[in-house]
Amino acid sequence: MNYIRNEEKEPKIDKSVVSISLGSSKRDHKAYAELLGKKYKIERIGTDGDFKKAIELLKQMDGKVDAFGLGGADFYLGAGEKRYIIRDLVKVKNAVSKTPFVDGSGIKNTLERDVVNVLLKAGIRLKGKKVLMPSAVDRFGIAEAFYNAGCKTLFGDFIFGLGLPIPIRTIKTLKIIAKLLLPPLTKLPFRILYPIGAEQEKPPSKKYQKYYLDADIIAGDFLYIKKYMPDNLSGKIIITNTITSDDLNELKRRNLDILVTVTPEFSGRYFGTNVIDAIVVSLIEKPIEEITDDDYRDMLSKLKFSPKINYLHEKRDGRKNKSN
Image (cartoon, rainbow, N blue to C red; front, side, top):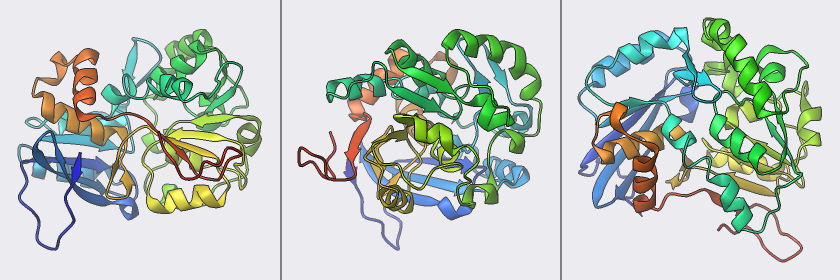
């Protein structure tokens, strides 16, 4: 992967992918990169929680870009094969008729699952480690991978999503609860389910920090993790994406030992899974409904995209700011 320096005059491009996000516009970013011989423009546009604006942007650019990603949201929630569409996002999804439109699910089911193997190959022991996932129904792949690796998992969907002090500890329980509760929950206003717009810029609350302090590994969407992140993360591993340079500096300030980024870096920014999903789909060039996990894995291999381990502080063995 070669980076093309940002210039005042936009360089010639072969393909363009755009993430339309329901998140804060303060996290907007644009990058250029050469991928498999094609020059890409990669852009994230936040709408500050404005659904109407998101729909307008999608309609304006439909057919004019190679792929869209949906940022700050997922079309579906689920655990296992059964998925439930979020009602507030139906109009967003239907705003596009020409351009492929993805939400990151293809990456969560492939690249994100691979994190467990990457950690094991790096010599990081997982069996018996306490893993906190503030939300598992939007990242079932990695939740299942950690559970199968023998980790002591805590899925915080009840705690962080609904404010109920009920930890979920097994995949079986997660599937049962998802089947019972996701049908009504996905009909709630989306802002109840996930921080959007200005909510993303609020400083972390101390409300649920005890769950973080008890965990060895914290995994999931960074904005969801950040919402209740404690001041001291010493000795912990965070596995996430959608990281800006400011986020990275903040994690260092909080003494985080290891940051595992699922998605690759583009000009100082680790985009969300939806952006990487859009890139991969634009290269596979098949109808979305025909793309398989094997297609994703094959293209990710060609792109040489893989989770990256970043050591943020000096360790006893002398490592500092290294990555695998």
